Image 1 (cartoon, rainbow, N blue to C red):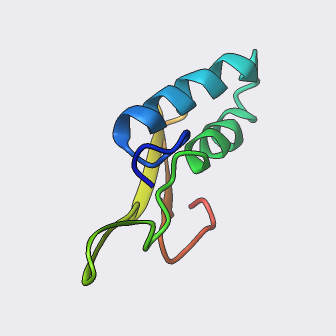
Image 2 (cartoon, rainbow, N blue to C red):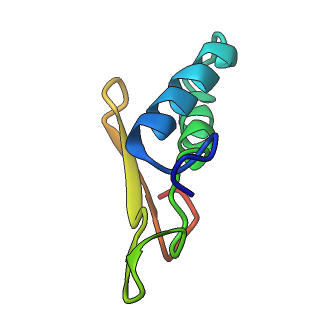
Length: 84
């Protein structure tokens, strides 16, 4: 996938996340976690997509976000898509 537009390299994912963030606009505190994880899903690396050799795959095993105002930690793992 290297070299393709929108690939899974770190620079491409950073640019994609920044680009999409500019379109979210103003959101409420209640909408913030959903909007954040929607944005993060666009840069999530699926298992098996980035392969450096036939036995090893680089993928996103988890993502988390912390709401400083509410003191809440949100977690999504590879095995559980629900946001905890």
